[in-house]
Image 1: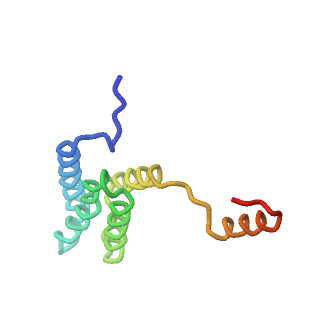
Image 2 (image 1 turned 90 degrees about the vertical axis):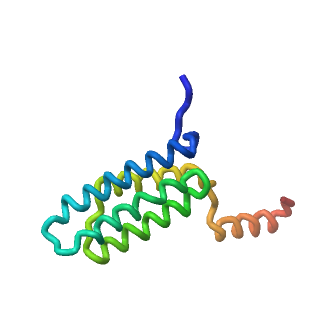
Length: 123
């Protein structure tokens, strides 16, 4: 059985999935914002939260940051995050976290280097 991950998806398929999720998020936001006079802002925010999914293959961390900024912008203008947007944000963070190398904080690296130098260990 072929191992199918988000990163292995073809660009056209990823674009189609992004478009479908964007439409679903926009529809969801309009349905939930029926008591508000301005219905276009929640739809645009919902699309902005989902749209960075198209960048997941090239720049997963940037995609996660863009989606987070869109999500926080929506919260600042009192537009709740849609379930679709929250799901996409979770996927973006999962992929970005999986692809980022684990790094030691600089202070620990510096302390280890100083300790090794005091013991005469050459790196």
